[in-house]
Length: 503
Image (tube, rainbow, N blue to C red; front, top):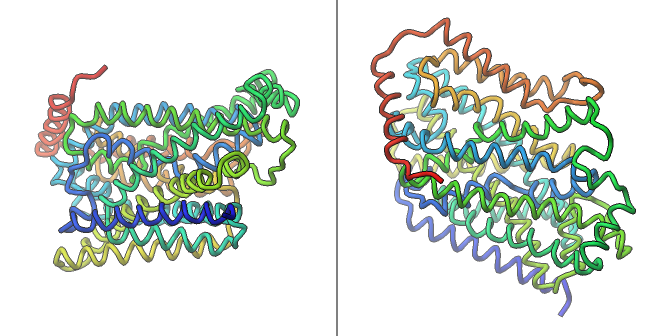
């Protein structure tokens, strides 16, 4: 049987399972809140794997291994920063956000939480944050569709456009019908596939290259500096700045709506502890696997004499060379899973931002059935716009994802942290800081100066500018609100009392 036939069988099975899960979720979803937040009933393992899978996206299977393959272990600082950021997010933000969103009038979106937490009667904060969600998620979805198009070019030798459209259509199918629950349940399957692929591929590649010693020797023959966390040279200002920028990816976690919405959807505050342990374990294994794929790939292609034109396709290329076509097909499906899990989550959050934070603010009272229909139409619209932007991609997958990640981290991260841990944040402080962070990311990305010959990741100036402006404006506009004080105390008490004992 031809190799492509096996791979096609694997992908058809994968697509069928995803759509089947979406249909199951459709049968379990009966109202608007269920479509947007699964009724706040996600068990810990679902919340953990769903957060991880929707977080990691195509950059875990393509972007990060490709960066390691091209540059070396110095790119692994991104993984270190992300692991630290994810742990802190689960440890401190998850329990308090779960309790506070319920205390704050049962908020089911991040923009509605901002409004309810800060008693913003102007609606400006909710509208602005809803608009930011739609803008940056459109860019984010576009970056994932780019990954889908590149995936199909290598896997089947087909056109970029065909692959991109296929990823968009299948993801739309199960997201539109299954809603948040469908996206979360498919994330569990997709996250498991990603982790297994990232463990299996480098192990088999090491064996094929002659063992660990031969593989590392091959890497050294190509470039010894690839095995150094500082690029193989004495620390310079450029190297230090690069490491700081890579670690700063961890700042982004506090403001990613498609990740922290999983905290809001957990069945209770106590779930945060076990979910953190599951999620961080999955993340460490997957990130180590991605880094290993990049490094092992250097030695493998050098030792075997095989060729690789695009570093971001190192995992796909090794699986096609080393594995039975059917198994390789499921590895290809795992790459696709990484892409689709993120797209589905982003589409759902975009949908909730449009319906909850824009339409309901300006529109009339609408039936739950109509709200669900509007939510599905928004999913379609964001996917279409993202697809149009993906027709002519500019930059690597990692660069595209990095811009959207910085946008959310700098816009929402400080606002989320200050909402949860500082009593005196005001609606005007949050709004001013949020807009400052978003604008700073855009300006820095296009016009940011080089520092000591290197570029500083835009999330750093954006995050700090947001934090500074939010604190200054809040101090100038703060007026004591006893009800807001009571809600803050209640949320803190619920988060502390209901948390399970931590290890």
